[in-house]
Length: 465
RNA sequence: UCCUCCUUAGCUCAGUUGGUUAGAGCAUCUGACUGUUAAUCAGAGGGUCGCUAGUUCAAGUCUAGCAGGGGGAGCCA
Image 1 (spheres, protein in one colour):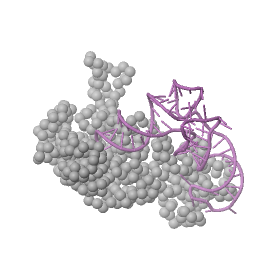
Image 2 (cartoon, helix red, strand yellow; image 1 turned 135 degrees about the horizontal axis):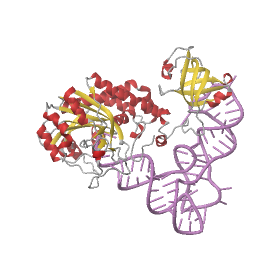
Image 3 (cartoon, rainbow, N blue to C red; image 1 turned 135 degrees about the vertical axis):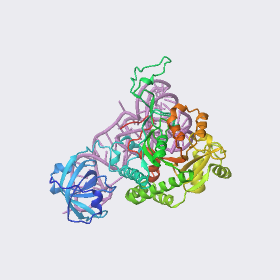
Image 4 (cartoon, rainbow, N blue to C red; image 1 turned 45 degrees about the vertical axis):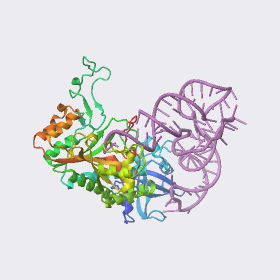
């Protein structure tokens, strides 16, 4: 085939350049027709839509069209024409077809009919070829890009926090061990424990559960920074909202207090959702139609509405005054349960809510204490349908106050000496938050299981692909 | 990890109080059809009923264990 530049299907679908010679390459979604004419729906990933390739049977060797089956990969050279049929405005009159890769119809798992999301999870290596996962993955990309763009435009610097960590003081849950020791015959200490001083790093190491502490180090020099990387939690969580490997965005800002922190979180989320609405229209429309008829309306509402801000104490008062009966009782000092958060966000206000001023005993050691000595300057952004999407706080910048909390919570000082140094040398008020990337994608796509918004989910008992 | 439901053809599912040869739609294959829209019409092939044990004359169906999956909860992002 003569070498001309490949056209992207997304561009051709918008083109009015009828009569021009075009070259498309992509995967066949379906073929139909009769003994005179074949219609091939071709997709190349550039858009959710397929382009219709029209092949006059007489113009092609029988062997070629026989190989054009659902799932096969082909190149088509032909003429872009105005469609004679209903349902599409442009199509390609095929002049030449080259088959790159066949797909045996007897064994190719994807059919030109709908599949359950559960089935597609079992063939995660092929599911990007479906409309749904094409849409989700394009939106996922757009959100990752928009995150970097937002922070860059706001003068933040992207910090690469380490993935392997020797500190387990991050306090965010169970961790995966990283080791090169011989699993059959590891060196042991006299007391029977494994001797990690002989391991690769000379100490016991784990996969990170948060880049926050390192982000704080960056903020104490560069002012405004963020991390965006993979995060690992070895919790045995079996829910549609948890992964063992997920991606997290953690901005950290010098000289921000808790109110600046909330302002940033709200502006950031609205920017991202607006970006999706403006740049992922076709994909969102597909997801809205197929999975969640209120998706686009809900995204528009979140962008338009001001988030409600209230304190934990006020939330507890609302819950008690509601007269609802709860599976878990509401009383000041215990953490809010999913049912409580859902009531506040979905029933009482019907819009995103930022809760602040949590009791110190249910929050992490690094959060700044309020003047009351009972609550900390934490803030959680709660979204309809998915609950907590952001968790953040103003950090304790006072060395003595921080040391007091570390001792209260039995965190070994020697493990966090470097973190404490930031408070010892040129400490500064600062704040930050963490955004679960997949939780954001859940909200933006309207999907209901987090395993369907990451290409290859890692969950308890599943590390396939 | 706890509670609960599910596992039958490639996919989505039906299968009665346990009873002869386990069904349907879609997909696939063959044929028909001069432009189709998840094309249509006709025909055909396709099953270790998740696995293991048990109860019974007889198990897809009942019981137990195990595995995998869904939903809810906890932990959290």
